[in-house]
Image (cartoon, rainbow, N blue to C red):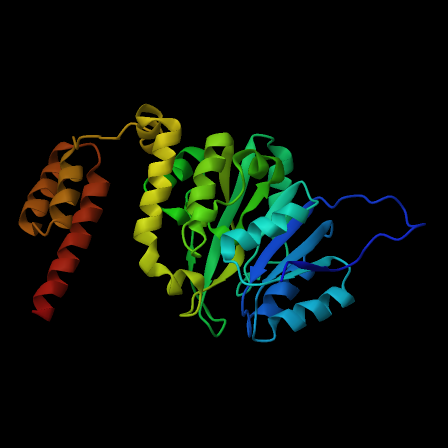
Length: 326
C-alpha cells in the first residue's frame, strides 16, 4: 500500500495558500502511550505559524487512529499513513510535502517546551548562515520525571568537531530546526541509514559542510529515556553506522579539511608558574605534605598572602577530617 494523506485540502473560493514558516516533522511507529503528550506539546507552542506533518510508519498500536482523529480536529496537522519503511525513509516522505522554509524535528515520545519553535525560528531568522540549530535538553524518565540535562556544544566549530568524532548528539535530533533549502541541497536523509540508527549523524555531517550549526543554551525539549526508544533498541548498530557516516564525511571533504575541522582550535597549555598553583596541583594528586610546603612558600614569598592563607586553612581542615575518619 502506498502512502495516503489525511488533512485539510484547498477548496475553490478559499484565499490563496500561504505556506507556513515552519514544518514540524514527526515519524511514528507504535508511539503509544507517549504520542498524545508529544503531539500536544507542539500544538501548544507560543509560535503559531507552522504545519505539523506526522508520518505514521505502519503503526499497529492505535497511533494511526489517534493521529488521524487529531488531523480532523486541528487543521495544522497533516498525516501520511504508509506501510512501515523505517525512520530515514519515513522522514524523507514527510520532507516531500513540507511547505515551511524551516523543518523542525520532533519525536513521538518527547515533549517540546512551549517556546521551542519561537526561540529556534528567531535564531534562524537572525543568522542566514545557519543550516541547523539545536538546543539543550532535559533528560526525562519513562514516567516523565526530569533527572538531568544534556548540553551539547554551542558553536559551529565545536559541533562540527564532535560530529567528526562520531558524537551524533552534538546536535540532538528531536530538537533540531533545519533550513529546508539546506536539507534539499545535501539530499535529505540517506536511505543507507534506514535501520533507525545513524541517519541523524550522517545528515548533520552533510549539513555542517553546507552551512553553520548552533545549539541554543535553553532547555527546549524533555528528552525521554526509556528501553523502547530508538536509541535504546538500536544501540548495537551505532558503532557500524557511525563508522560509515564518518568515513563518508572523510571521503567528501578530504583528509586535510577533515583533520582541520576535527581540531578547530589549538591545544591550550599554560604551565604552572606560582607556588600556589603548584600547591593546588599537589593537593589534587593526593600529595598533601607537598601541597602544604608550596602553600607555605606562597604565604612567605608571594604577594598573594591572603589567598595562600585561605588555601592553608582549607588544606588543614581537610587533613583533620581525614585523620578523624581514618
